[in-house]
Image (cartoon, rainbow, N blue to C red; front, side, top):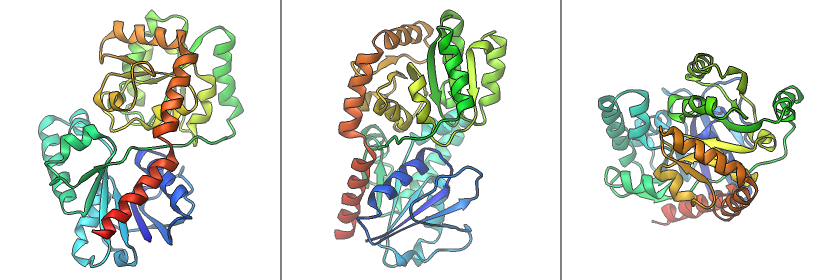
Length: 348
């Protein structure tokens, strides 16, 4: 089997990390994997296969492959644009998010409606669509002509050297007796991190460590200053393997308004971290209330109670979350499930 992945870039973000892990565990089980991408970036994932930068106006040799699997809107539109040139390869895509909800947070409901229906129209022309949760599958299957199959995301955490300077910044807080909340993400409004900042004045013995960059970062910094909690928030830059800093964190925070899956939360579970997450369907689907602490969105009392419970029960909850993640959400299991799906598509 020969597989091509089409990506927007090789930067260390959700969909790209997913493909990175699929490549890692499938490269020795298939004949060829190539990754194609559009944008250069300064900090990228080093894929264990051939990678090629491409131009949206120039088609690749699609029929060199059995499977062409695109990820994100731009990649899907690229494949759709050249679909009439594809005679042999099967074309697939993945729904990585609740498209309508994500666009609604970034734009408004009208623009979200138009973009979502356009994207679904593009995806209906593919041979198959993968959803990363049953919740997304159920929500979009009619718009996608029932071509959707659920394959859960998976991840792995490897040993990785930490930056001693960044490490010392976190450890200094711990040495002063603070409890450490932590998160890492591409920082947008939809990640919901402002909810945690807003309640820090009520949790005077906690520090919040935020790793990452993004368009909403400056808003968070201004909010922290306005609320006079800047001294208990540590903003750290983009890091290649942010999960390597989980060892210094007591409770992992995932307060998103919308997520397709919650890959970083699974990484935290694999590291046996106690987790606080928003009470949204995609998170409810993968974890039980005995494994993580759910809180109601934009409810300060609920969030505070969940943080305190997660800290008090951090060892037992971390163990339970780890057991669930190892059973269902490893990168190897995800890759194997993709291979089974590819074979099914080719045998149709």
